[in-house]
Length: 414
Ligand SMILES: *Cc1c(COP(=O)(O)O)cnc(C)c1O
Image (cartoon, rainbow, N blue to C red; front, side):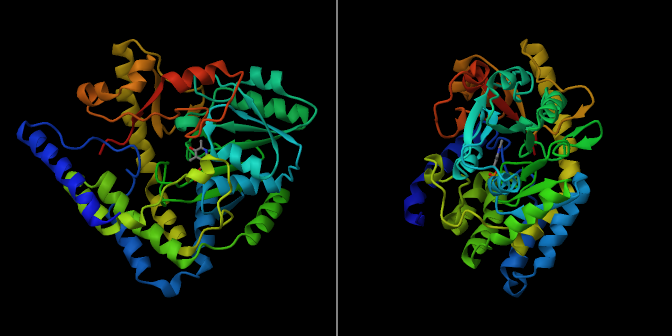
């Protein structure tokens, strides 16, 4: 985007900001992503941009994997350029073959079904429950077949899913594998153990809207040495991103910091966009929405991105504490507004990446009420069963309802 093209947009935005400032109204609302970025992350990104000689240093990557595994209570962790690639690694580690079936929730990110599609594994969608938006065991039991090999569990919005233990036990009885999608729930616990450690394999994301942020990135974990062996083989078959992509991703750190987090982002974001806007990365490309595997999909994480991850991990517990405290504010909003709070299952500690609530569909369609009444911008995860793509998913009435009614409040307000 050229400066000339965005100049009129900046002028309009700043004119609106002047009106707001003059009438004493706030000029920013809390962002839904990148709120865990701080000045130290920006400094680190510049440091690595200026230190290309260190980019091939794999010890930083292995340190990141080691620190994550320790913190997560997992035996093995492998770092990739995205959670979706970590999922592809899990699929390879389980040796899922064309024609095998996986049961996965019909309320997910499109990159999840894509990863199975790329491996030609058949998708069977199960419904979710509306307490925690996790897969419903009742519906899994209805959809299981002779060809089912694996079940995918997710912990959406940072809530430990309601049927977690029951699904794990069911899968064990039936000899099925369990993959855990922990992209929203990094750090959430059940019975004192972090999510991702009860199933066979799990994957995590450090994409910019998730619990911790390297702009893009993800990890696959396991506690089983055989699967670790397979994950390592897959990992070694992946290439590193080229230097131009790494530089671009590093420039997204100041870009996102000034757009989403900096206290004066109402004007700083415009300057950052002029300076770094050309480097802006989007997390899901139009081709991925269509189900096409992007060129250079299978990439592992390079040192500069792992260094960002290490810095984010130092802060993740503190940020997760803050998310839980903000959740209490949304609990009381639910109370006064007569709405159902999301369920925190017994013996679990959620992380509340976002705080989900079901509201009347028109309140999801037109969200201006939230800014007016509550001073926040609402999230809309998910607007479709295979967000943000609109693949047909049938036989999942609860997921249909969540698509129409589920909104999400931000949990890091400053
Ligand atoms: C973000 C996300 C993913 C994919 O993670 P990436 O790092 O973006 O590839 C998978 N599942 C869920 C539920 C997610 O929110």
